Image (cartoon, rainbow, N blue to C red; front, side, top):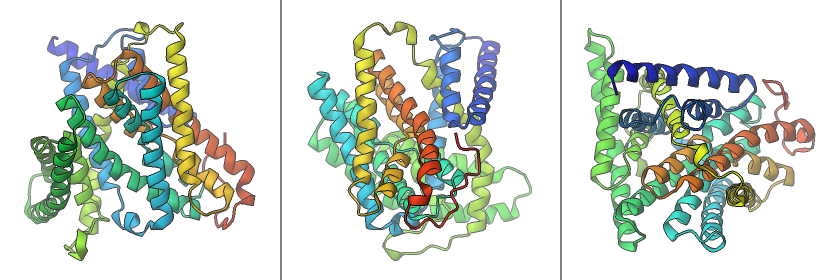
Length: 414
């Protein structure tokens, strides 16, 4: 590809994804849906203007790593520790049930291989904490009992999801499931999560010191990007996916981070906030490229839409995706309506589910139809859950126990 052509394609990706993200936000939908639609519009499914070239895919990889860095830096470890038994039950139930039921449906009903079925189950475990927090905040319910349970469970889900992603990555590289590979990956991940945050925290102290004396602008974003890329490389060296490095770096630099086993390291919350503020624009540039690339990789024209397989496949896994998250919420002792609200809030897969699906596609585990089916499932859960939550609170808020919030949404109920 000529340089000027690449620049024009990148221009289209950034502008169209932003316009459609704004349009999605106007209709109270997650912005990730607009960015995904931009890829479908520009790619082989509709206009066919852009192909997912190697260069664009590399930029998308950077987007994934930075997106996981943002997830990590926004993760409240204290909330995870204080989440309590109910959040842990919801998280474990909402993680294990989709994994097991997704694998069972793929392996025994649709006759897929064990590795493909595992990837499908892994994709269904995800919960998009960003979308969940946004909807609960709009409804003034983030500090209520069900809101606290959901946020704690979503944080635990994120951590377990990243670990599962590393294991599935190892399976995709080795070409099969092996107890030895699982043990190796889990050992490396454990060491990585113990040592990497300590190293990152110490490095952040040096960055803060240098920033006090630096006379040239841009030190913080340059050093943090370098740290994230180093961690991504290190994660690959130890046998984990690169995006695990981005997550670990974000987790270590979070203003809400403290080291395990009670070993505290002085944390400058103001400096951590500056890191987050200065890194956000970079994340907002690169992360849409990943979601657009997902849409570009989805060739809807190659799918036989008249075949009953794609519809049966997508709808079957959609119902499993919804019911499995509800089942996890029903395991706790709480008011029935609170459990329904928790189940609804845990349903959206969003960007986390797309990361799983894209890993399955890029490693050749998912064929075109399976990949398309999973993207349909992720899109439906991401779209329908916010609408369902808003409708639910509009009709049942007054019947909930502990209704400390006024249930008046900050944006119109749809």
